[in-house]
Length: 294
Image 1 (cartoon, one colour):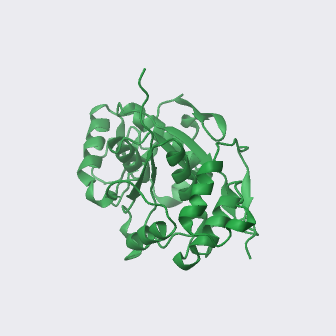
Image 2: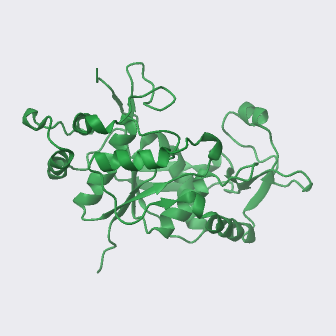
């Protein structure tokens, strides 16, 4: 029986240069793809212009290249694929799964993360709103996380979720699903901060009749105060001039501390060592990795 060829991907948003936490996620995804003799794709998720930084997409690509993380094929830009997302929305609408929601941010905050379906049967169509997808009363999502083990989610507990924003921008959940399917992605390895999105994406894959990839989530990398490394928290950037040191740190976070004699080696040498030692370890679900870098 033939097996499907491995296709992985790294899909950053161009809201600034890569920081070291994002680099670690890219390294993990890259190593897992290469160990399985697979392809590794780069996708730029540029669907939120107000948050994007001019030139960031090119900066990210240059950072990956400088760290030896060379992707296969052309870069895919989500901003060039709007027609595909609209086609997916039309398919969901034809199945009776979409409705317009006019609830404001204050009301949604008061709900505390659980949408109560207030607009689900709304008959007044004059006021435009966001598009939500109906998840039903008891949508149980089960999947095997290849880094964390079995996962179970009652998607109904969070309620119907947005697939197109009130301002007309396509929501992350829908765009990711459409593009993973279009690119033939078979394995998604990313940070655990995105694990809550996985059940929603699996739900959309199923409703659109698309093949669901396998998912694995690495622990969130935090600073000394327990905050996730992020641009908002001024996380150290993955500067090309310190690529070797950056890779040593990223590998160490992933449980692969290079031997001292490899410190200062070029990125390709470090990644080859990483490939020889990469294995899918099982992390506890709530494990976090703390940045000890000075």
